[in-house]
Image (cartoon, rainbow, N blue to C red; front, side):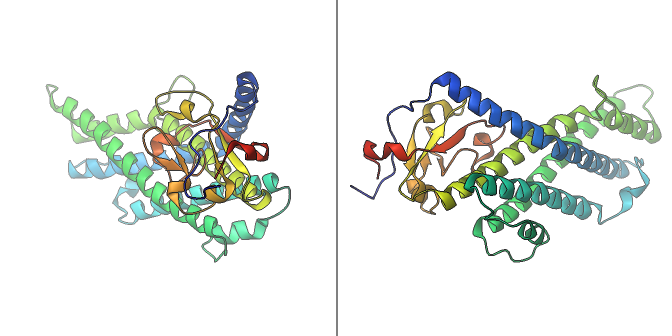
Length: 300
């Protein structure tokens, strides 16, 4: 057999669509439940970021939104909180899922806490997740800053069009009331709530996918097949990936040319891979499983 190219086609899985959807829905429901604590913590942190950014903008106009806005280290402190939050939740869920998938403790609890604190772990994918969490924290922080700049500046522009123009004190009150307002369900600042839920769902999904994959890598034969299970079509092309397989050894390897190739050309070793573009991971509910019975398909 040729060992030079990944598999792009395989016969369709024997599992019925209804069974597959039920299994993936159960996985999605579990991830939804596990993401709620992270979403709550994320919402509080995004809210702090929103207030901080609004205060900085208002200071340029001579207003004050909150007293702590003058702290020059506040941006760094909030970013550090975001990094710690993503690392703590992500590493724990990834490790738990890896242990459950492998059926044995391959990641001891002490290693999780040590890695979250920045200590050496001697596990490559732990480092990759830790570093990736920092990159995602920077991205989330930047997006939050831009969104708050848009919200505050829109309020200021509308205020300047009023006659008479509201004072800076009045503008500061309006901005604070906007950020502190609640939606019909009693949640603070809908923008933060919605983003927090999406971020948390995506982070937990990615961390569990990472843990499950590495549990498979520790358990399965390198020549077994890893099958992509699609939950639904959508506009990302994931529906076209259903039933496609690659060798476990290729999914675990660094040669991206041997990974799954999505319709848009993106390469991923498995669904919800945390290193993939956010468009392929945000709220994705695809799954995977080992298919050693498909060795006769002609896999590489």
